Length: 114
Length: 114
Image (cartoon, rainbow over all chains, first blue to last red; front, side, top):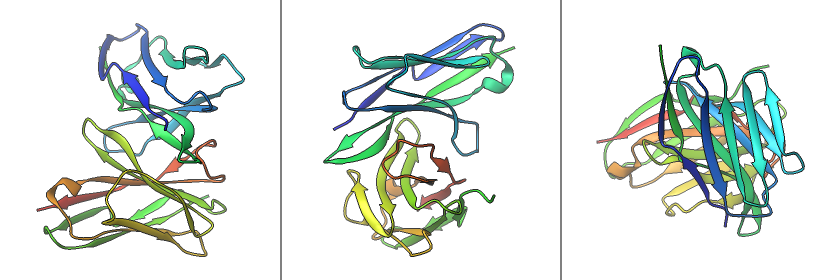
């Protein structure tokens, strides 16, 4: 079944610098890769997603890249701001025992230092 | 459009008791998934319901069960509670099943077992 590994588990960067979070997945049939942001005490919310027919997608300061051959995808945040501090989860939609479902990584706690 | 609503927000239960959590999805969404969130473990998939049928189940013991009603509202039940069941339980609704469209999360129910 699908397994998603996420690194690093914690990341601290200076305000204005870039942050990169990486994930690998195991199911080559996975076709949808969303990223969720969870601020302290709040619900996870989708910030960007990418499908397997696209290699890169960008939305303002956030971008996601996908390498299907290597089965890994990454989240890039540029010009980080204090409000980017949160836990970020990657996920992959893969098949478990015949039924497709969303599998999440373990999360990355991102801290932006002023 | 109202978001995903979970009730109650907080619960304190004693070991051995059972508990029922409720999730009302976004209007028009027929898929509801449940996740257990604990520190360091990310979001662990419990099960997914679509059109009143369980279409997928994670690796949790049989003490964890769920159901979905004709109006798409879903309930999750945990019987014979253990201390290790203390966690934030999140539900997510989506238009399509299988996790390949955006999932909208509720605020979660924080369960504490003492």
